[in-house]
Image 1 (tube, rainbow, N blue to C red):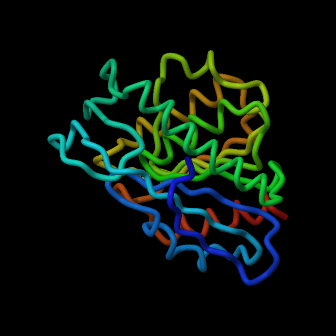
Image 2 (cartoon, rainbow, N blue to C red):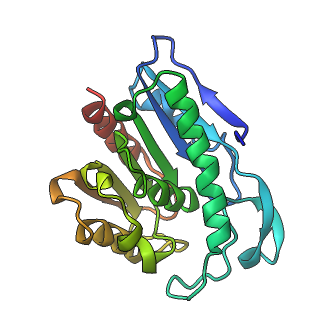
Length: 222
């Protein structure tokens, strides 16, 4: 299954691609407006739309979501449904396969995401047997934390990762983001491949963060 996507096709010949996953309740249009600010003229951006589903923490209201969230407590057991996570991972893997079929090499393909989308981007990237060019985790956190280190692939240890988080985030506390970063480091990523940035903001992105993402992408795709 290929999810419907918002795509930004560059004017120059495409030589790299970024698959960018939105957060809970948003859609593929959410981050499309920042593409011109990133300074990546030969990169295709793919912003998939997650399907609508009932979300427990929002009273069962249907909204775009990668998986159901059962609790706002990041320490709660069973916070995510493993079957939902596996289903969403399959959707993302299908998008990756499509970019490879379009001629994008794995070393020129990145995953990015915000909040729930960041959690899924990290989940998928860290389990791939063939490493991607990089991973961007914005206001993100770990899913299925207990099995993260055990299920992580050896190849993912060479992955370059950029974490960005707001220190005033009241949806995904910065502590949850730091815990995800620490888990990546503790499970084998060299410190020089993991970048952490904090910003004086809430659950959002800000111009300095967008600037940092653009510079980081330029280095990864030089």
